[in-house]
Image (cartoon, rainbow, N blue to C red; front, top):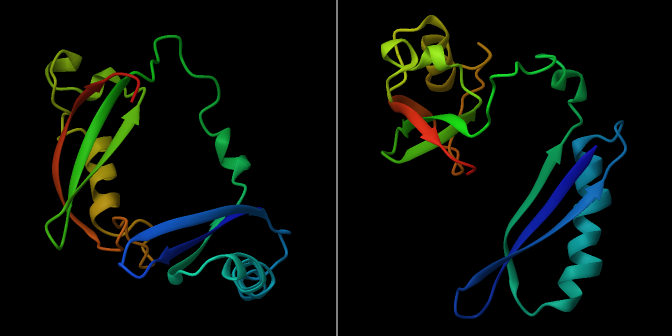
Length: 165
């Protein structure tokens, strides 16, 4: 599996700059071993020897290969278009908005039988998606969060979004 080691370095003025490296970790490696075998040497015998700055954040971002899940949908239909998106906005418990763009959205999920610009939030699939994002993804305490770890606590809006980005 692949992982990213990300270490943010601060200087004397408090300015912070992240340094990242991608690593390949054998699948049988435990998280504790990954930290001791990859993160410790990267900083203590590598990066730490080169910089005068101080580490203020250290992350190991694991990217397991989930290839079996990539084939769920099969071949996309001819009318699918990744430029046609829905932009969902959620709010964290701390009041910050987080958006997610979903490409190749079913046109039936737009209001007015696909002719509108709003997502039909009364559609069963849309209701289920919103509930998963704002409640409990796996009924085991796994919550959708923002980049600071704050729970997405409520749905704000969902609208059509068109374009490459």
